[in-house]
Length: 192
Image (cartoon, rainbow, N blue to C red; front, side, top):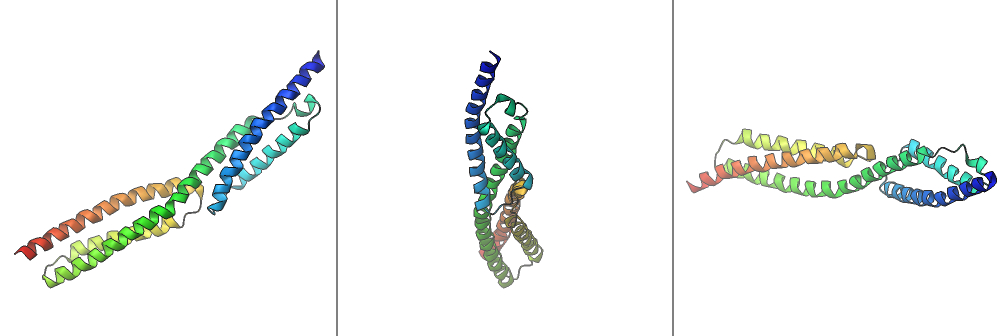
């Protein structure tokens, strides 16, 4: 009777291994996304995945339930959570180049507008140096932040990068508002 129970337990464990293998496949697929994006995978995660793979190998090779009695499965879910968080960070990091490319286009357009407004203010003999300088400082700040964000290759820093990109939206809005105010002054001067 005891032997039959042990045999059933071993069969159940081997069935559970199939689910674990599917989980491992999903994890390795997700990590390939990170690797393809040239994102550093922490050594703790690669070591933990190696341990899980060896655990799965032990279960598959087991002939007696006593061989697998000492195996701890608690790590499997925590490693899965860690990998899932890392892969989510990788997906966010993959979006950064697209976002920074668009932001770079926008900032170049605003720089061209700023140069045009500077020439208009000079021709109209308006003293808008402080306002134009303020906009130029904001543009320089945005460019610096964009360069910093574009260089991030660590999934753990993805959240910080996304926060910085969100802050850039506020800076872009401030640039637009200040440029609209300068444009209004220039339009009023042209109307006189």
